[in-house]
Length: 167
Image (cartoon, rainbow, N blue to C red; front, side):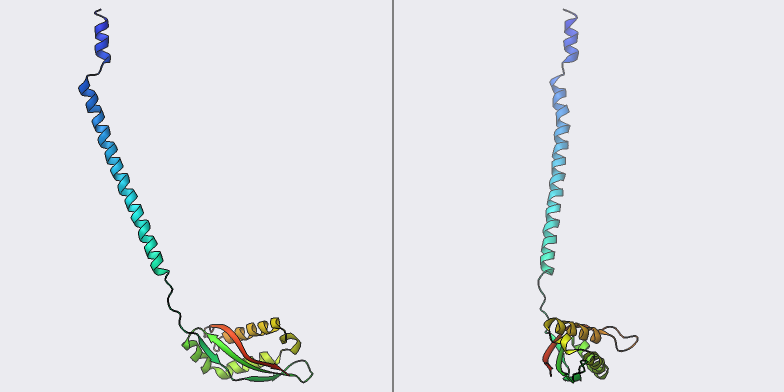
């Protein structure tokens, strides 16, 4: 019996030691939960702030009214050789009033460019809807070209035909 008593004493742990071993583990888990909660709150706050800022900037800003440049009507002979001519009134939509003033400043050069373009057309090409759309795109391309070597391209958003007669 003497041999069995020491074995039991070495294997058993006194109750005071088990309580002390569990106390540091409980403190560590509480600290870990605390820091996890702080991180979750920070992430939620950051997400809410980003959502708020994105919705603030997504509000539509009031659009400026469109700026139009009305050109005097053009009358040109067409290239068919049949004696037909084109009478055309054009209105340009530009980006802003500064662009409109720039175009008005160079109006003689602009009209000359457009006269060359219009007089090179054939009535069969411009009498269809597709032909008119292509002509409008060609006019916009001519208007966008700078008037000076150091000039910047002009901002023309659309070309409107207010009168279009082939006769």
